[in-house]
Length: 562
Ligand SMILES: *Cc1c(COP(=O)(O)O)cnc(C)c1O
Ligand SMILES: [Zn+2]
Image (cartoon, rainbow, N blue to C red; front, top):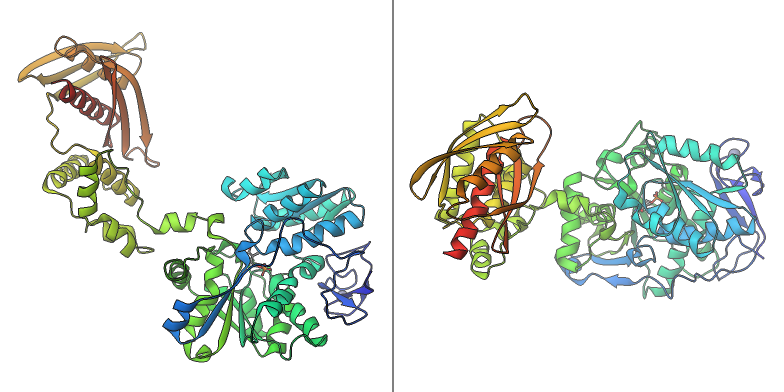
């Protein structure tokens, strides 16, 4: 077992790991592991050298030929997204879980907003130690799917991440629990990436660019290179570059001011690095100083742009946080020109797809018909999806080229909605376009509703009168139903029963937003002689949406039988 002490990074005091593995008991500073001897193989603060049962090898060190040629910079990627849970945090989680077992703790607990929860839950489950994850109330279920899958006890707490962290610390004291997180043993696990890089590289890197949140990973990478250099494995340590989103950059700001900055809250699309209180700030400051590195920021726009650039140029789909290194390079091309640069790609894109969904025009659902698929391709919509990535949607939507028939349908929709004094939101406009792409633009309507009235009855039922032109004749029916929509749809069924009987099998309403003025999409399913069709229509008026969808479904059935 390697001899080591747990030293405070700030005051130097030696702490006892049975008392704390988070903060110094004397000054509250972060801790660091000091090994008594220098060795050429990586050292861990554990009784025996661990082998990770969930991985069979190293993550790839990949040369990015196309980006290198584009920028005249030798660009490589350390593919940390290939870790078992899809994120580099596995390196640290494995060691933390082994430490918890070594200290005979009965369970592990941590506060997290996503990746760390997934990663710790995975190893905890594998080693069969219970795991409690504290997450803020607004954490999306998607982010928690992995933690749920790995059977962690997920505790959703009122408030934000800081509330969870505090609560989890208190919870940890209530039993024999191991408090996991951005602490000293995680750093010991995560430093292994530096040893891998050293083993894989054929020449030393000039720069390693690291997306930074709490700074734990940056500190770990620096420590890994330092220990390897001390053991003579490398001659020089690459310059380390700390990159943060402009909108969440307490570390970068703190490096400039040479003091730790804590924000009230931070907000960025790169959620994995959104840390208002960067625990390991002092380690990042030291790492930047020690390696003559840099600290830089990237705007939200450049994050999105670099994210897409890595995907379309090199076929790598990462989390938004991993776009920070490429953004930093593009921001300072002259600094990096002809240098060997390594981008640390910390997590996979499939962990956080919301950014992509928000940035791209959604694909409308098309009819199951090749002619209409071809017509859609001609409309210019797919090209627009690609060109407009990340741009405001309302400006691009107007450019869609509908066929004349379809444009008429669309304009008809717009004018009917406009008459009701409503302006459409972007999402409503998109939904309308999906409807228009789906409608049969040449559909003839054998029945046209010209008027309707609904009257609440004393018995709680609703009576309605619908006037319509059916086969060029005006007719009128009355019907009583349990609600206004039920009542008018019943009247329609009655009205057409003599000439072409249909049965209403299902109706469904989707309201596209808050407020009484929101667009309503009605879906109506009708059958005639066993054939079932569904049609949709939209209007700010529920009854009108329902009636229009009914008429459409009726017309489609009618066409099929005539
Ligand atoms: C946690 C995380 C980071 C930030 O690491 P820190 O150690 O908090 O600086 C970066 N990228 C991804 C994908 C992460 O999950
Ligand atoms: Zn201290």
